[in-house]
Amino acid sequence: MSETISGPDGQPRCAWCQSAPEFFEYHDNEWSYPVADDQRLFEKLCLESFQSGLSWRTILSKRENFRSAFYDFDFNKMTTFTDVDIERLLQDKGIIRHRGKIEAVINNARRVQELIETEGSLAAYVWQYEAETPPDPQTASTSPESVAMSKDLKKRGWKFVGPTTVFAFMQAMGLVNDHATGCVMREKASHLRREFLKPE
Figure 1 (tube, rainbow, N blue to C red):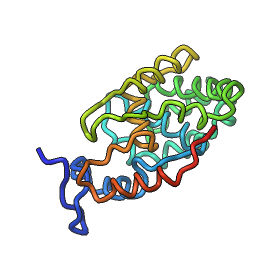
Figure 2 (tube, rainbow, N blue to C red; figure 1 turned 90 degrees about the vertical axis):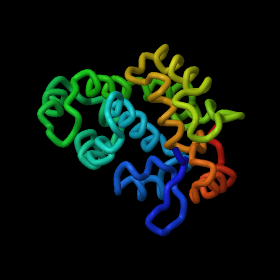
Figure 3 (tube, one colour; figure 1 turned 180 degrees about the vertical axis):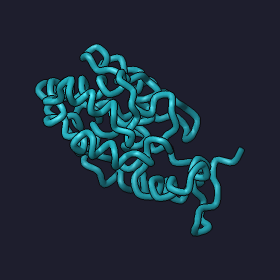
């Protein structure tokens, strides 16, 4: 199977874009570009947790509903959630109504506050795990770095952050440039990474 398909403009894109029309915009404008904003990083970790066992299309189509339900994934606000909020979220048809995942991301909001106290920022912590030698594009679902980050997050009390979930997060947030070799956006991702100031 080819790693690329022809996009709307005739240029090659990663083959996974053909799974849904809305994937092209996400792929071209967000996926695999480096992010240093703590709130965006936390949002993506949460959404990847919700995706576990589901398709990304399901999560992407509900992303604005998730943002509304979880206060734009402002982890400082999410730490105030109570059992009343959990019950509210379980009734919200616009999101994934999975008690374990809802409780996990609320728990993780508290854990990210603790992490920031010790590491300075979520971004500084996350970018420690950037691979010096990433896997070949489109060949892996985990990496040594995603395994290590998953293990450390779990040790810190995070939930729903397995190695595959963490690797998908790394792909999306630019820690791994996983655009296919022939994809027109691969060089853009590489350029943005070269211009990116790694958080410390």
